[in-house]
Length: 326
Ligand code: PBG
Ligand code: ZN
Image 1 (cartoon, rainbow, N blue to C red):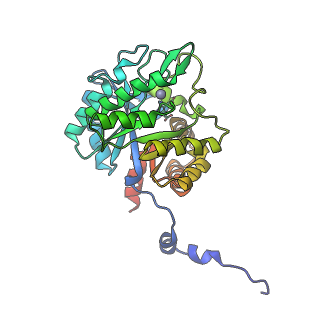
Image 2: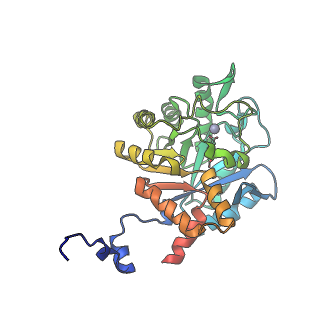
Image 3: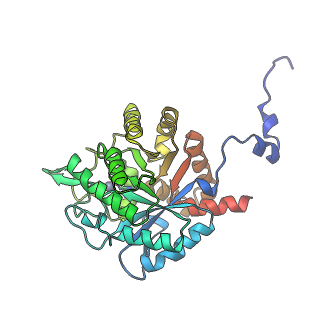
């Protein structure tokens, strides 16, 4: 044959050689598993739009955490369903709040499990917004005061990492200062630095009962059309002292994961959100896709894009599948 060409298939010939040249790998170490905790008793309630995801009451929580730990997953992130909501979300920063109780309980029973606290008000406000409302919109600076109180009370309860998801301006600076002044200089901030106003959060709002009662979150969460704005958000959070940067959602935003990876030198977390989970589950339940293969392919794509860690409702399944493969 006259034409010269490259034989790329040489490196694909056997499973052994493919594994040897593989550029990206997944492990249970990479995952953060979200847990929904409810202020009820003896409840393990499946979320209708998220098959396989449950809300747990405190008395049912430890069994679940034990399973997560057994699978080799190091970190969980907690979301709370309080029995009382009000205008300012006071249960978010109450010392007996559901997140504070769950955190204390888990840290006592599983000292090595990393507990990440999601710091926001929307699960605790009666209007479902992520801050305080004045004249129909969320006000920034007043909301910061309550978010700082929330973060400090979460650290007091023993949270290992604070993950503010509220998208107020200056939340990293304010929370860093609040934590430091309260003596928590060593508690890292995993900032939801780049969070889009996304339709992919739909099922989560059922799971956490946190849908806004009016309007939407577009005055604080980002426009899905914007890429440069993501760099501005990530830059300011780094300047303010963020230890990790979250990009959320993950799959429609892998370009942003790569951008943020390239402009920073902290661990990047891709948040594989509820709608992304629900879509795969629905297709899999219909027998239209191979769930296991699809999920592992999606997760590896997040790491390939630049994520160090993946926050995903698939963490347990994926950890199990990875274990079976070895
Ligand atoms: C709260 C919060 C949300 C998610 C995580 N933290 C919802 C929102 O902003 O409406 C979404 C998670 C998911 O969809 O999996 N601020
Ligand atoms: Zn919120």
